[in-house]
Length: 289
Image (tube, rainbow, N blue to C red; front, side, top):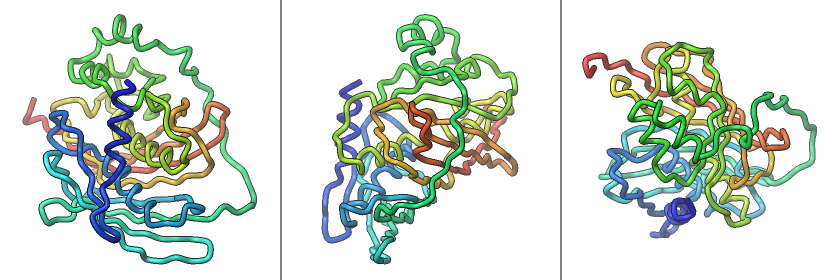
């Protein structure tokens, strides 16, 4: 797993081409398109490198415009929209084959004291109470459909421990909620910006799938055409992405072949560290059955 996290850090370490211009690569693992979380993470790295170190990103809003081609690099162009006394705004466009495939706006803020409140973390099983990787491989994976099993067997930079993991072994419709513990599979540098970029990468991993829970389906099915359409992420408090975080997700609505999902990300101590929202394509393709 340490190999996977070192690869992720290399992927997030963009090459500087020119002022406001960066280049990123994709892992050559045989995927047909670039993982959306990778583009979010790389775009956030590009934006962060144009901002004063004492300002941290507090929100980003992104649109996926075209599927990314993993065989060629992605160029990130940063527009320095505004540098204010308290806030800094950046716009990033990801380009491949001469076309924009992704656009993102991000806002950075200096630390300020102020009013504080948050919602309570859901009462769910902790990661140590869930099956270990060895138990999942021996007891749970054999019961899962082939695409799901292949996904969880693959070496990844982010470790996932689904609380409701049995949904992957049944097509029974359930309440559209999904909780999963996540963390990087290796130790990360102490730079808070790296932890924010890694969490941005991880935030796209399971969110769209939550919109299919109510229908007893998953994004792993051949008859579901799934793709992220947009993504919004807000950072509330400091955290470490190499420590367990609870990603608590729900899906208030689905319709017109689109699913809307939300997520709250908590530390082990119950601190709300980030919030996420996303709409994605969940188009049934029964012609492929």
